[in-house]
Image (cartoon, rainbow, N blue to C red):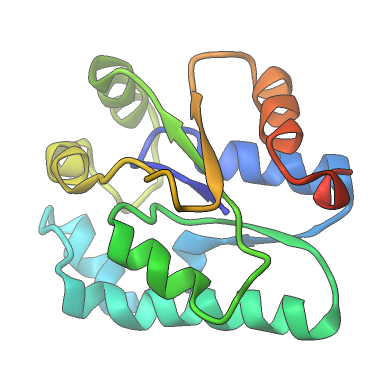
Length: 165
């Protein structure tokens, strides 16, 4: 799972990981209920009750991949430790790649993109919600300011040897 706040590059990196490895890819934003998309587009941050059905959809996708014995990569903000715990509950294959970037860089990226339901005005709420990966969480943290191919190599290198492609 490639995780991070909006604008961190998680979709770009997750797609690139999928392309390099041949793994299935799921865009976490596509799994949001329409009500969540409307709420965020209106500049209203999601609360835990909003996120729960979305996180369950992502966990279901992970479970489908595991049951099929197939690897996959999904983009998801996974901002809080408790969200990450829910996503990996019963899913031993989950590894997180948390992307971090300077808030000014994130803000500039969000203001420059078009056609996305997540406005730059919600960046502050996402940054305030973000819990860093803890030592007992399976994953790694990466600076998002490097070229995508370098970042993809770092993400893959951080996987256990049996999972690398």
